[in-house]
Image (cartoon, rainbow, N blue to C red; front, top):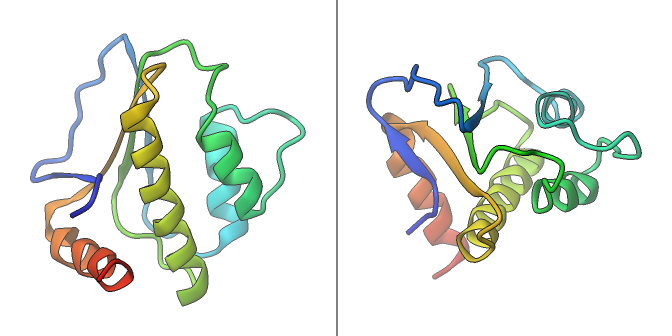
Length: 127
């Protein structure tokens, strides 16, 4: 089981009470992916493009006024295998964190055709 949500049709509607970012196709390395999050979620200036800094900022977001935050993926970013596993693990940990912290409603969305792949990957790390 995963805390990710899945969509059949790309969610185009944007609520005024929501901060929506779309992770586009083609981000191929950790640096570009984290930099994208830094720009779109307005991570603090002291942030770095490493996984520890990414997770620390992703599980804070106090500077964002919107209660609802949607992170919509067009695909699973085609990072190298190690970074891809780390990214998905940190997203899953972050999604779990946000189910308990009620200061924001954070949703992480992927296309429905990736559901089996993402849930299979999650099962392999949690037998």
